Length: 196
Image 1 (tube, rainbow, N blue to C red):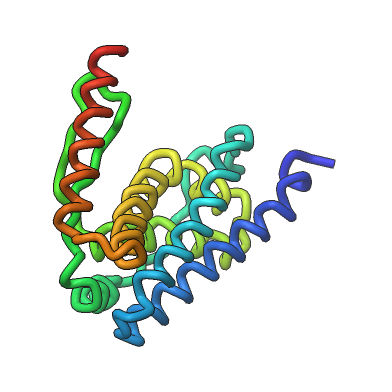
Image 2: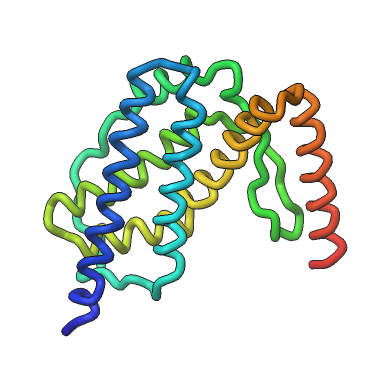
């Protein structure tokens, strides 16, 4: 049995989780129902990060070919981005931390609609490989892009969505919640600087 055979069931499971996320996010964006969108997105992003954690826990996947085969044109996600921006407009913009272990951690402003669309782009690229029968290439891409991009982006989205849900459930003023989180984030950054 080869390493590829050992990963075949795993690849199918990851592909199913990716497909589930892609379908769910498109349905959430199309429904334009803000009452349910935040909680559903929190659930979907959490489940996707479980798949990402599994990708990060396995050994490096080695693709069959030295160069990535052409996956074809990446799908146009501008419509999805626009729908999410409209749906999430009151909470779309949020503060994020680029790398908590960088020598100088960088705080920046991001948009949930941009971040979710960015994650979707990475996932769909791998899904194109998977649907074309290149399962090892797909798994390599999902692992590589999880470690290099969509893992940290989805984690930032999860933190922002969690903040909104906790504000609503705990009946806390959102501005006050953000201030407390910003203070805690600043303290974390300061600790990282003190203990490199």
